[in-house]
Amino acid sequence: MAEVKIGDTVKAHYHSGTYIGEVIEDRGANYLIEVLAVLKHPLQGDLHNYGKLEDVFFHERKALAHHEKMNVKKAAVHSFEGEIPPYGKSLKEAVKNYRQKLVAEDHEFNKQSLLKLNSLEKHYY
Image (cartoon, rainbow, N blue to C red):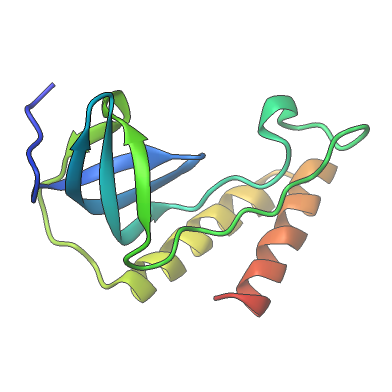
């Protein structure tokens, strides 16, 4: 794993989403990272019982906001090389990619996830 320093641009996996961000602070086992773009939208539903609908709380998860800070374990942080897309464009692309994945398979779980994603898009994005 490449050494990551304060000020570096990184790719970080956080709460089922993946983001491009800037390392702001080294916090021992974690890095504090400022969100610059979204690579993968967070999953909907109960992550501890993924794919289940009954007897679980079906979570609606928003992507982290532009410039929001996240405290990420160092193992989930990797160097990022390349152009950073504008936040709004990256969020739309991440939502589009997640939607395509959900509609590709006709399952009740995917339908419920799609409803949550549509709600997020309508109310927040």
